[in-house]
Image 1 (spheres, one colour):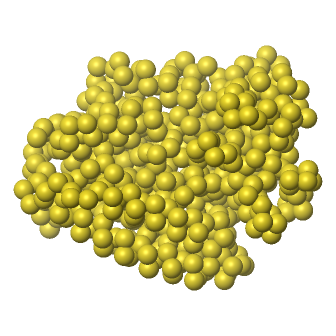
Image 2 (image 1 turned 135 degrees about the vertical axis):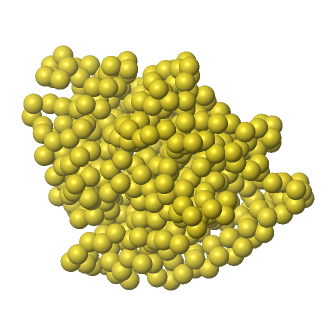
Image 3 (image 1 turned 90 degrees about the horizontal axis):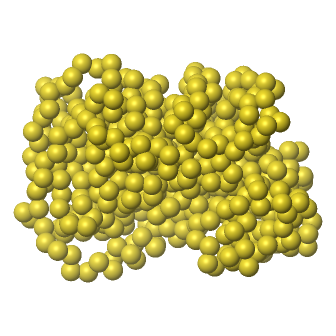
Length: 528
């Protein structure tokens, strides 16, 4: 078994992790662990863009107002102001790295800005409809060629190594010293010692049956942080994107919010619109409102889907602004210049996560969490569209600055991973069956609309699954599938616990038993 020594270990290779790595690598030895290929995370899937007050008609104050409004009283205003005021600087950094944002000579910024739900003005800078892919490819190339960055692809972190696990907590509190990581290809477990460890593993969309997220979104960082002793906040706020393509051969294909921002209309099968009945902002209402409206219409009328129609726009416009969506839909027999797009809501973004401060620091010394893994207070009860990539950029840089300002820490030799009391699994079918069961009951019982009874049913099933998986984990050698399932069950439990503690309907959490909103907004904090 190998023992790797680093200045900083980054677990996850999305935009937050890449931003942090590039800002640290000028004077730190950085290791980046990613469980598939470098660019296979959710950041690469982001279609819409990055929100920031860039134009003369816009201002950080207007962006702040829109974010606070979407967050339904749950945003931390100090954090929100800090992040959004740094938006233009973060975008400029990406431009300097070479990100080819879509140009517009008629705009004073020189770039095309689009509008999405919840925004009062056009402020979303983008690269056609493949912003995340373009950003990740640009930064990924720099990460791969940097002499101070080691990329460990096809490695999945197993658990953090902490003072408590080493029996040292009485003398120094609970610190993080690194992590164990499994090489998916060789089966070897490496011990990674690091002065600082950063969780940047993304969200937990795969806990649900229908999601816009890639297969990597299994809540790994949130679950590892929870097991290590971090506080977890607001996990009940799971954002369901209103428009995921409904097609048997289109797994997890998102139809970006920008389609509605550019004039797309939501319609019933008979061609009638329904959003104006639900909200005065119609198709440009925040995501939670649009998702609930679609869910309501589908259940009321017994529909499999609704339709997003932008065929009234010129074909040339659609091919220029949505080349990826146009091509993918065409492959599936849908011509968006002529036909409406069948869509359904799907789990999209985890607004809660590990509690952090302005620099991404967690409750454990030497442990940070950034990106979708973290709960910073920016998103509140409902994330405003295209604020997520901005959060990755701002906190990636803030965490780097905090780490660089520290005095060097001693490197600690850690014990190797112990496999002496486990064997190879006799039956692995239990993993796939439990995975399927979890995702189905989470969709049915802990979805867009919730009740006490549904949550209780989910909690009961999670308890049984947790016991079964814990026994399996204790007796057999770890595999990537087992580790992901273990993390998904832990994350599902945190979602249900949080939902049961919130006795109101606010933002993304809607309960038929508590349909009113309380006068005062409070975070749901869970600690061990």
